[in-house]
Amino acid sequence: MDIKDGMFTSPTLGSLTPKEAALEISKFIDEDPDRYYRVVIGSDSQTKIVDGKNVTDFVTALVVHRSGRGARYFWRKQRVEKRPVLREKIFMETLMSLFTAQEVVPMLRHLIPSSKYDLEVHVDVGPIGPTREMIKEVVGMVNGNGFEAKTKPDSWGASHVADKHT
Image (cartoon, rainbow, N blue to C red; front, top):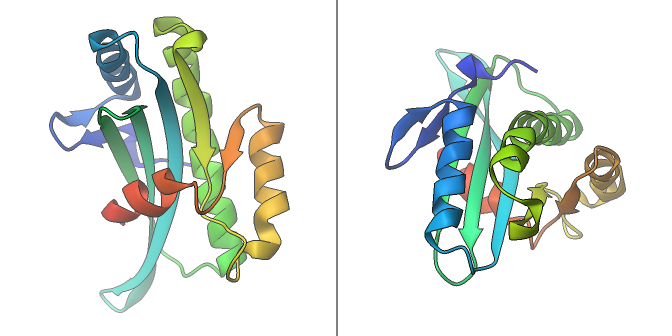
C-alpha cells in the first residue's frame, strides 16, 4: 500500500520522516525513563464526496503514551478515489497499520530497548455493530504479523486519534 510520501505530521513539529518520528518517540521516553509507555499504531477512514467523486481518506496514527502523564502522536493520510465496502475498508485500515508497524518498529527497536514500552496495533472493530464478524480475521492478521491487537473499546488509537484527522 502506497502511503503518500511516507511523511508523518506532528501537531507541534510539522512534517516528519518515519525516522524523525521514531527519534521523537525515543526523546519522549528518555524524558521520563522510569514511566510505563505504550506505542500504539491505529488507522481509521472516512468516505466523502469531493468534486463529485467518492474518495476515502485513510489516516494512520503513531502514538507514544506515557501512562498518566500525556502522549505524543504523529499521523499520515492517504486518499483513495473509491468508496470501499465496509469489509474492504477495515482490511485496508488494518493493512495500513501493519505497514506502518513494519516500517517504524525496527527503527524503534534500534533506538529504545523493548523493555521500555509495549507495542499495540489498534483496529477499529468491536463486539457491537457491523464489524463484530471481522474481529477474528483482523486480530489474526495483526497477531500473525507478530503484533498485539486491541479492538474496541480499547482501540483508542484508531477510533479517537486517527479518527480526529479523517
